[in-house]
Image (cartoon, rainbow, N blue to C red; front, side, top):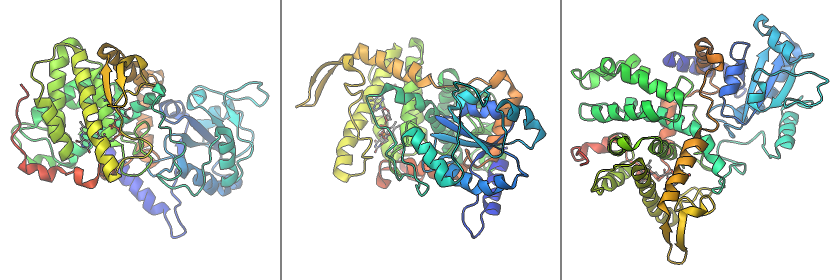
Length: 489
Ligand SMILES: Cc1cc2nc3c(=O)[nH]c(=O)nc-3n(C[C@H](O)[C@H](O)[C@H](O)COP(=O)(O)OP(=O)(O)OC[C@H]3O[C@@H](n4cnc5c(N)ncnc54)[C@H](O)[C@@H]3O)c2cc1C
């Protein structure tokens, strides 16, 4: 379970750390039962698979070299997360014999490179003319392995890279619509973190319970990730038992097991501890708040006309009750209250959200310019920029910064960007539809510190992700003084 997984990770971290430095295992151990599922599920663009045998002395000597490279790419503290998944398979285990045979493993260690999906159900033969999977022929030391990778990718990763340094690989090309495809992982991350924060801060109270239930309903029906839909549905089904109306407030939440059951809302491997589309080029920028915007936009383009008013109210209430950035929720609340007539069409709500987000962007653009707090690689802009959607602009007077929007085209663009494009990388189905395998994957992920972070760490990331300056981000303690909740209409 989650707490066990976290404890195991901590124990492993303690046990594996000696005074000689960081000897944690970063590479993900794969075996025949989880190989396909993990490689299918990873957000990474490339994978390295090391086939080895635990008894082989050369492999033991090689392990620190491989780990030195793996720590750059795997896990929440990685300098370059989500790009390459570094894995290993122990061919000395009987269970892996067929798998190792399929890849014609003739010596140990043997390293392969490819897109993760190419390994799924894949194989490799020595004399194959064309293969999507390559052998890494020169990876004998950490330096040489990283040089091989750099040559292959045209990158300049360095063994000394630390988190948030050397971010030149980070693409902030706003005119590339394909970037949002990586946002699917951030939508899962943001959903899971939002619920961790809600539980950690004991935010489910008599007066907020109904708004959480409504938001859960919205997620069950329209979350772009199937595993988040399933997780929220499970939480919704047991909600009355987990948070009964007659047991308030704190004593119920002191029970860890109850709180933790809700936190795996998008599966045990999430939150992963890093961001893909929403990754900033420095610490304390982007992250959670970016992920939350992407989630809200992705919901807004998935609802039907008849749900538009419900979605609007639910979103307003959710931000008001559960977004722990005081300045954000107050500004958003004001924008919600300024809406005078009910929404009748899905497009009206999606366009309202888009316009509200642009108002925030406009305000923050000035603040960030004055205070120098913005992420230099991701400056705030009125969105979508012309390069992303030329037809959205009916008229543009850059001198006075006035834009006449073609709202029909903006809605079409939002629908395609946060609809199909966002979901295009999504691999939400089980491999072979096998629940058993999925459970094994979740167990594996929970038991390796390569991809999972405990609640405390998730919270630290949430705090670090309040990328709008410490002063702007008040925590829940300040909300004691807030006005009583109002209904929106
Ligand atoms: C509801 C809410 C209210 C907030 N209010 C405040 C506030 O009052 N003060 C404050 O300091 N911070 C506020 N924030 C945080 C702030 O808006 C940013 O999320 C944060 O600064 C990170 O910015 P970012 O560069 O990652 O882009 P974000 O603004 O987070 O946007 C994420 C992504 O959404 C896309 N996008 C940008 N604009 C739009 C748009 N108009 N419509 C659709 N998609 C768009 C872009 O691809 C962008 O990269 C708020 C966040 C949320 C979720």
